[in-house]
Length: 346
Image 1 (tube, rainbow, N blue to C red):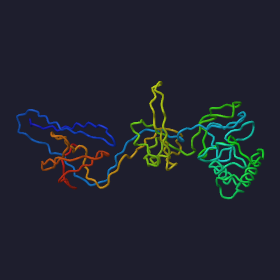
Image 2: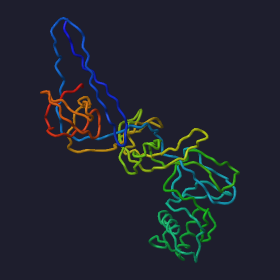
Image 3: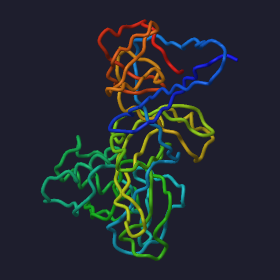
Image 4: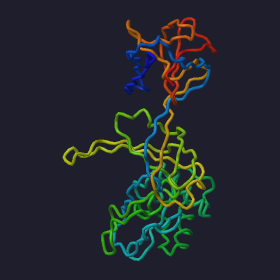
């Protein structure tokens, strides 16, 4: 029988900071035999210059994004509510109080006071004028922060068109303000309940992915970042992180604080026919351009500490490592060059 040297690779991955550190140990064992020693040919790989992207995958859920509460400051009694799944757009009733519609306006600033002639300027006036203009009532010209006679005139025309009392004034609870059209995900109020308070849970109307992250993965929570999406039952596509919110959790219930991301789906057709389901979201943590890289299996833990590469002619070159990506690792070292062959276990 022949004597054979068995080369084994032990890889231990430890996640630190923005990437992974891989410790690689090569263990040699011998099997006794009376035949002469024969070594198996070593596997080699070329040192390549390439672009690397350190990525992490997280599971999310396809739906319409994170829920939020729709609240009202209207007095009276709830007399009509939308159904779960209904979409409410600008100018349409979000609900009815005392048999009168309470329409939805778009904006980032809620109405925090009653609007009436003689009031001071403010961003809430601009929100109302922008919505009136979008609905075809723009007697005041270009929307601004000033409540004028012409603002009141436009309000009266809008009130008449909606079957409301034509006062030329607008109470803080006469409309509800949301960033855009909403989809009703659940109702929290019932007919006959007070019209003020939390009435329903709503989401956006576009398909979106919701991802919950542990606090330790906060580095993935970057608004505006592109994300690769693989939708179960759908097609691969990309998305954009549109919002980042935080939950406090409840220690008494064993609930930890979470970071909730809403990721828009760039190509809605990728989710066609899929109402809900799991999604694999791939976040790119770091990118490196034109760096030298080798397979992870080429790394050798040196006795004096650190890492090295063994060339095909038996030399050991100490290296420092950078980011890890899809089985490759960035390496730097004196004498290391593109095209050089190094021993690897892969």
